[in-house]
Image: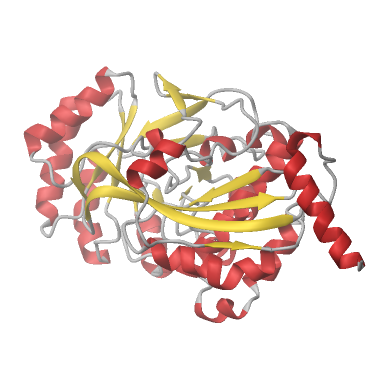
Length: 400
C-alpha cells in the first residue's frame, strides 16, 4: 500500500468518525467543494437608481474537511449567480482539494494568482475568492470553538446598526415618509434614503420632505448608487447639507476617484463609498486622495475576511469611519465590525432580507446588534432554505 493510498484511507476514516477526530492538519484537509445559489424573495418590490428587485440572490460555497466540518461562504448579488459558482467549481476547486483549510492566507494568494487573475482582479472572480475565504474563516472559528468576532479579537459590546430597508426610490412621497417613520417607531435612530432620480430636483424635494417628517434628532443618510455627475452633485449638495446628511453614498461611478475627491473637498458632508470597490489597492488610493471619509468595505466584494481586515485597519489608522456595505445581509459583518482598533465607533448596515435562510439569524434590538455566540461566521444555510429557494441548475460539487 502506497503512502498516498494510506493517507486517503485515513482521511476517509476521519470523515466517518466525525467528532472523535484529531483537530490537527489531517482533519483540516479539504475533501469537497460544493456550490449552489438561493433566490430569496423580498417582502415587497424595491428599487434604487440602478436596479429594481423582487429577490435577493445568495451564491453559496460549502467547503468540507476530513474531520466532518463544513465551512460556508456566501455572497449577495442581483443576478447571474452561476458566474460566481462556476469560478469556484471550475477554477478554484482543484487548488483547494487536498490542501489544508487552516492555510487561509496561503490559499488566498494561490487563488488570487491563478490565471483567472488576468480576467478578474475585481468583480466576479474576486467575489468568488471572497466566498472561499469566508468559508475558510468560518471553519477556523468552528475549529477554535468560538464565534468569528471573538477569534478576531473583537469587542463583545453591542454594535450600533443603521437601517437600509427603507427609503426606496420606487416609493411616492407619502409612502416614503410612512416607510421611514415606521422604522423610527420601531427604535431605529439611523435611516437611509435612496436618491438618483433623473431630475435632481425631485431628489431635493424628497430629501426636504423626509427631514421635515422625521425631525432633526434622527440620523439621515442618502445613497445615489453612482447616478450623478459632478455638476448634478454640486447642484444638490446645498440641499443635502441643509438636511444634515450623515453621509452621501456612491455619488459617482465607482472608478472615478477624481470626482469623489473634488466633491469631498467642496463639502462639509462626508462622502461614502465601497460597495463597488473591490481591492485594498483601490481603497488605499481613495483614502490617500481624501476622496472618501466613510469606508464601506464589503466582505463579499473585496477578497473576503482576509482583505477586509487589511482595508479596515488601514481606514482606522487614518481616522476614517468604517461602515461596511452589507452584501451579505450583515451575516459576516456582524462579526467583523468592532475588530479593528479605532477611536470611531463601529457601525453596521442592517438589511433583513435573507434572515430566514441562515441557521443563526442576526439579533438587533433598538438599533443595537447583539454579538453572535455560536462558533463560526454565522453563514450556515438551513436545509429548508435550500428546499424553498435553491436555483435549479446553478452550482456543482467537486470531491477528492
